[in-house]
Image (cartoon, rainbow, N blue to C red; front, side, top):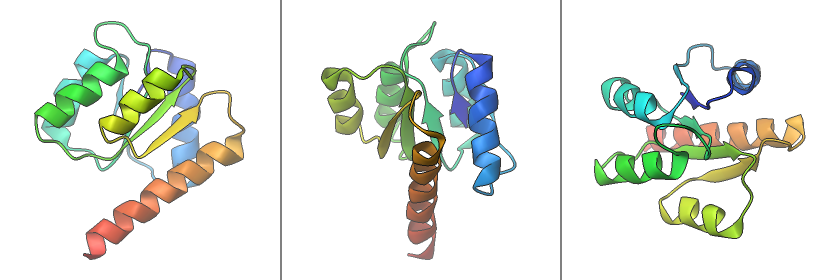
Length: 123
């Protein structure tokens, strides 16, 4: 699932997901809409922006953890402050990629996350 308030970012991330073999994904433009979708559909992976209206990404991640959701989360954001990165890590995000990172870096993060999902599925 892709959660970002910018439609062009969602489109770009969707294309990257297809590149790593994921064809089906849900999208949400803010944390509040995403919370409902996540709890209903239980996606395998959540790609989450930080700065969004309604509910920001850190608050969404916090609420998911309070709801005992262990969905793997990769933060994909322009926000690079150390306090935000640390809070995301504290809440269990498995990765943090800056939006302006090279495409290869984002694809590598997605592949790493998918390999973790495959390992968990095998156990």
